[in-house]
Length: 327
Image: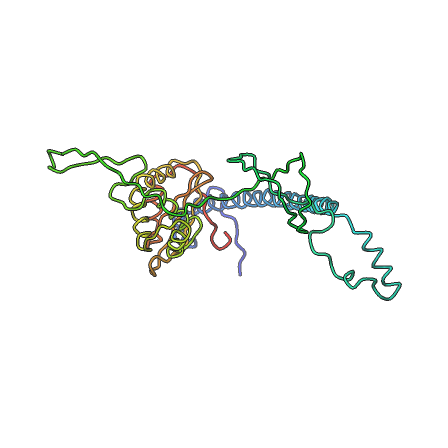
């Protein structure tokens, strides 16, 4: 095979714009791309070096923080153990029992019930708001020994006790309304009192208490009905509670819409969704909120369209969401 030789100085290749050995590409363009690729490769190497240096610094920082965390944990454990003093008397007695071969008292071998020695105790704070005071006369007979030989004392004993007051029966109020005639609708109208719900046999306080027991304390409908029957003497059926729910939901639509508008203009919002069963049918419950707001939305769908109905088309705040698959 003959060795390739260099062309003359003024030689111009007629195929430099369309070389058959380069699949019809221009030799000038190929050389420019080759040089550009070399520059890109060197840039990638420089970026790799920078990332390696940052990773090395991050690993060193992580090791330092792990050592500091271990030191803080050790100091915390030592500080916590200082609150508990060892029972030295019990240790001395146990060694003496082992030397004698038998314990002096069968109860000595059992562990004493209660908090460890030196454990700080907790006491209920004494009530400061006194609603009423009751004077109790001195007893005429000792409640312990039954003796009647008692002498009066000039010293009093004060005892503060907290209790709840339960009404033995519901308060029934009869409202007598003055009416006015509407000429346009040709029907009489009446106004509601401050503590009255027109055309409702059960008042607002009872309904609010029932909703609190149902949703804040998570008591079932039938149990709520039983509580009202036993404690307050107010009887109704579980279906009435369902009616309370629907009425409260209807009256709260404006508050619900206002809450959604506040979510849309919030600077920081956390969002998440999970599966939800509604009347035995699969749904999804969506959450959006922060430390001041909490908005929930139940929907059959799990698409981006539902998110747009919550956050709007152009949400400008910061959205924090749950990571997926550890990403």
